Image 1: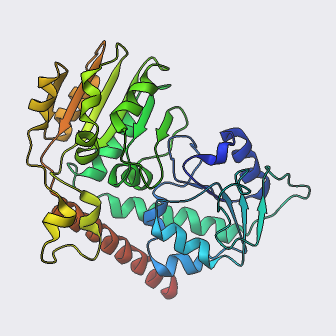
Image 2: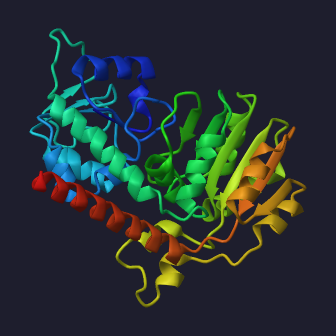
Length: 335
């Protein structure tokens, strides 16, 4: 069972009940709403051998999945796909599904899932965690994981498009007590600060993780600050980080066309709007900054990231996962 970030408007309780009734592993693009979801699913499914071993007879998809190529590749392997989305009549949610439902289905007959198959999911989840154990503690993925873990219960979190939302999906440990928001779509970069401000007016404490380009794109929003508590963590890698993970990285003209370095001191710009701020460049500094109490808007600029290094880290993570999967399979074959 695979759940898109917006959950197609269904409640967590409805989704979790269907997953239990089906006896299905739960993969979700928003790991902060489902404590029982599999952790690090995009990493878990990044190995083709794992995807094939876990091939499902039926993939139930709630809403639209937009973040992970490995999850999309896994869905393509299913013998049958069932999409549940009440918007199917208005937008193209089909994606070639075998069946589309506008309402949450009820399971009439109990389903007995293959116990060995379920155990395999848990085993590969453990291998994904093992591959993550050597990931740099000051990196964009580690930042997403740390922020997700440190938020207090009932906090609100807005996550901007591009790398931040994908890092949250891949690196965060599932929990079920944070209200999350995201702008998904072709113009997802627009209005990130403004969106976070609006969210903050409805919650006691709101946080936002926003990439540097998305932050600068909506910087004028700071000219009309709110009186509510909002802490924005800006991931400053001096440009468009997601493009460095694509094949065109390193080609002639890449920096001008795709990297788009801004070469700006974001903290100074924020100070010009009269907004309190601080720069951090380590895990310890970020932890300390998150524990501070603020009564209005505050910006934490996370520095020291390299778009090139981040792409290398992600590639090395995939290689490390490939190695631990190979080791497991060799051990199993020997037994």
